[in-house]
Length: 256
Image: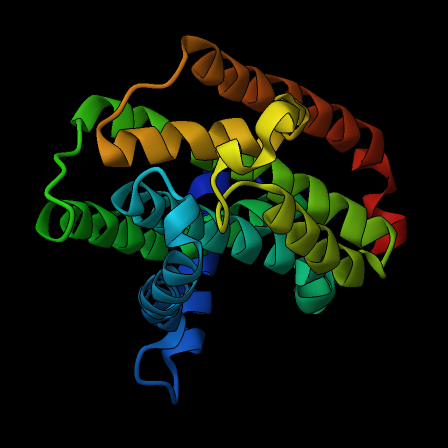
C-alpha cells in the first residue's frame, strides 16, 4: 500500500479533522461543543453536590471546585480522543482501503478534531477561575501544562488506534479503562482523603498530568517532580507508541 509523502500528513489530517467537525455539526446545534456544556453542568452539579456533602472534610471548597473543573476539562479531552481513536480504524476502513491516506494521518486527525473543543474548555476554565474564584492564571505554566496534555493524549490516542486496528474489541475495552482511571484519579475527591495512603497516587500516571494542569489553572505551585514525571510520561509513552507503530507498519495491509 503506497503512502503519501511525509510533508502531506498534516494537511491531510487537518482536512479529515475538518470533515469530521462539519459532519458532527450537521443537524446539531452545537455538535462537539455539547461537551463544553457538559463540563459546565458537571462542575456546577457535581461541585455543588459533592462540595455540600464533603464540606466539613474539605480544607478549601474553592480549591475543590478548581480541582474539579481542571480535572473534568482534562478528562473530557482524554476520553474523547482515546474512545474515538479506538474505533477510528473501523470507521475509516473503507477510505483506507481505496486511498493513499495512511493510518498515522487518521490517528492525527482524531486529535486535531478535538483540539478546538479543548481550547474552548481551557478558555472557559480560565474565565471561571478568575470570575468565580478570583484566581489569576499564570500563562507560561498553563501553556506548558496544556502542551504536555496534548502530547500525552496524542500518544494514548495513537496507541489506542493501532491496537484497535489489530484487536477490534479494543473499542469496548478503552472506555472501561478510562472510566476506571477517572475514578482512581483525585478529581471527584481531594488527594488528602487517602491519608497515609496518599503515596499510592505516585503509581497513577494520570495524576501528575492532572496535578500540573490544576496547579496552572489555580495559580498555585506543585513539586517540580510532577512536571518532570509528566514530561517523562510523554517521552516514554511516545517511545512506546513509536515502537508499536514500527512493529505494526508492515502489517497494516493485512489488517485493512
